[in-house]
Length: 158
Image (tube, rainbow, N blue to C red; front, side, top):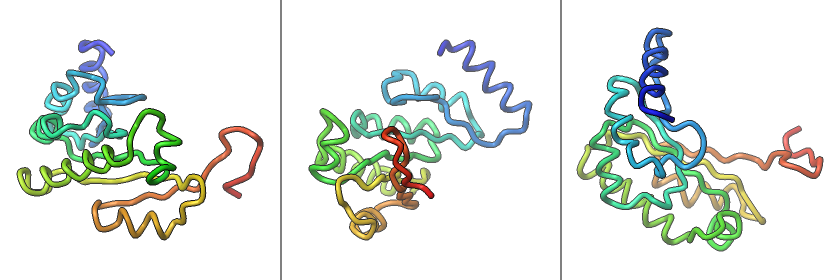
């Protein structure tokens, strides 16, 4: 999205009385090399993004936090080898390292200025308890989704 259009949308959101904004739309927000500029422009809005953390290195973490990011949600469908089966070309240990380092920087350098969340869909047999035991000590909010009807006509959410 062009900068002019983005600024128009932020202006409209302010006029409508919005208090929060997600400045990325759909897809992986860290592909936007100017995301930090958008975060700064959003100023007093409660800004949030959802990411798979594949591009979340320490420098990017610092830039996002310094730019005013208020909430980050990590998308993790599955754990360990199951995560890698779902997230093709992404590695579980790299994901965990990126998330852990973001959390460390957020806490140690920025005084926990950003709320951290994880959204998980149990895949290939993980139990909800395994997911809770792993993630709950690390993040502020954990959301565990039951699988939904992507295809095949299965009724997972009665």
